[in-house]
Image (cartoon, rainbow, N blue to C red; front, side):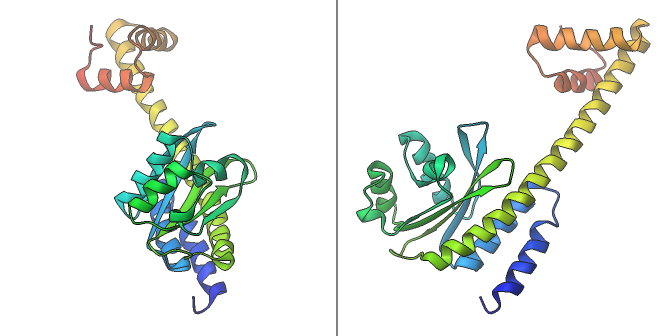
Length: 224
């Protein structure tokens, strides 16, 4: 980077300027490729305490390698999520910490990996993962840069997730309110009675309340 401080300032502005999780992840990957100058990059999200998934990647191969860690139960990303802040794989061909994963990675033509935890003061979002087909690609300086990027990314993604959840909650309340209105008008129910009907249908049919409301609004009837 020509001016690291300027680059990071611009990166921070761009990352925190998006309300969408998808847009934020895309910007994270874009800046990661520039900042560390590597072949591939990916972001893995942590759901709950143990379920992980690839949120975005610059190449389909990244998602395949992420899934491999899940399937064989070993790999640097999993270790970073559990008890490390970052890990470097200097050369997959000689890596012995995760033999099954490393052998598959080397066979796919990937030699180096840098994995960094994305976390805030209250939660772990996931990992930022950088790959390259050259061995010994990443050094301590790359690790420090990735740490800065990952921290900014975690805060930006946490904010974007909360914003999306807020709007989804508001939208769901609007839909349920419309569905209540339909039932109240059609069957002369009060608001509590109409909501009880929706809830009972949702529980009996094992369908989310929002989906029940959407069906009722679209068809004007609750399917039998």
